[in-house]
Amino acid sequence: MQVIINGKLEELQDGTTVALLLEGKGLTPARVAVEINEDLVLRKTFSDTAVSDGDRIEIVTLVGGG
Amino acid sequence: MPEDTYKVGSFTFSSRLFVGTGKYATMDLMERCLEASGCEVVTVAVRRDVLDDSGKAKQDSILDHIDLKKITILPNTAGCFTAKDAVRSARLSRELLEGLDNPGARWVKLEVLADKKTLLPDTVGTLEATKQLVDEGLEVLAYTNDDPILAKKLKDAGATSVMPLGSPIGSGQGILNPGNISICLEYLKEGDPDYPVIVDAGVGTASDVAVAMELGADGVLLNTGIAGAKDALNMSVAMAKACEAGRLAYQAGRIPKKRYATASSPVDGVIAPGM
Image (tube, rainbow over all chains, first blue to last red; front, side, top):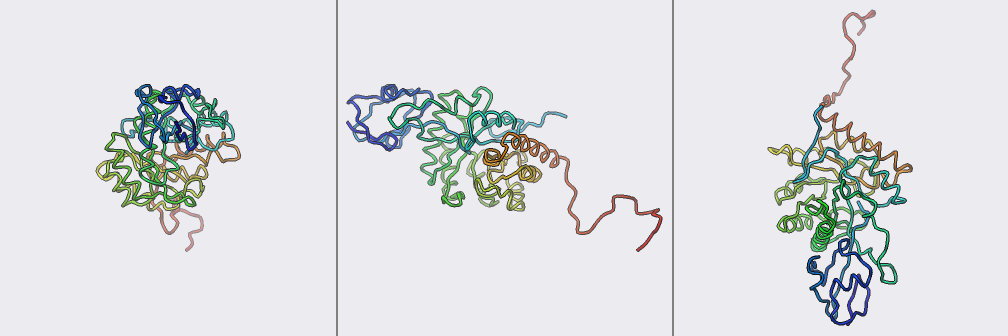
C-alpha cells in the first residue's frame, strides 16, 4: 500500500501498524507523536493502530523554537 | 527577602524569564545560555524533523540537550497559520511531552499567526483555538497583540495566561507600546492580581526586558534576543539581570514622571540665593 509520510510518498507492507512503522524507521516511540489523516494517534494505541492505503501520516518531534 | 515565586496555572516558578531554543549557533551554546539565564521554562516547537533524506531516524535531538528533569518544556504552536493547525500541533505536543514524562504536557504557548512577513497573531484564530484547547483541558498561554480588549477576551475564554507581544517576533524592536501593555496588565489583573501576564516577542536587548518587568509583567519570553546576539552567553546573563532588576524596580515603585525638575539638594541655605 502507499501512504504519505511527512509529505513524502512511501510504500508499506499491508498490515503495518504505527508501532511497526516507527520501528522500521528506527524511531523511539517516546520521542515522537503521530497523526493519521490529521487525527492524533495516542501512544498507547501505536501497536493496535493499523495504517491504511492512502493514509496521510505525520510523525513529529520537538525542535528548537521560540 | 522571601523568595519571589509566582504561578502560571498549575505551575509555580521563581525565574521570570522564559527562553526559546531556536536559532542558536550550536546545541552546546544553547545549553550554556539556558543555564546562564537561570530559566526554568524553555519553549520548543513541533516539527516533522525526525527523518533524514533516506527516511531513517535522525540521531541528534534537542531533547538530548535539555535537562527534562529540571526544565519545564513549554511547547509552542509556532508556524501555525490557522486555529485548526494550532490545535493539531498542541495535541501532538501534549502527547510528546506525556511520553517524555515532562510536566509541560499540561500546557501550550498558543500561536496562531496571520502573515509570514509580520508574524503578527491572527487574533480571531487565536481566540477560537484558545476556546477549543481549554475545552480539551490544556492550560493555554495565548500569544497575542498588545491589545487590551482582545487580551481580556482571551482571559474570559479561559486562557491561563495572556502573552501580549512587545513587537513582532524576532524584530528586536523592544516594547513598542508600553501604554497598551500597561492597560493589558490593568485589565487582566483587575480583581485578579495574580493572573499571569508574560510579555512575549520583540526583545532586542536587556533594557527591553527591564521595561516589560517595570510595567508589571510577571515574566518575559524571548529567543532571538539571546540566540542572535554577538555573544549569546553574555546576553543571556544580561537578560536575567535585567529581568530581576525590572521586577525589583516594579515592586519598589517608580517615581511619577514630572514635567519640570525637582531639586535633590535642599533649596534653602544656598550661598547665592538667586532667581
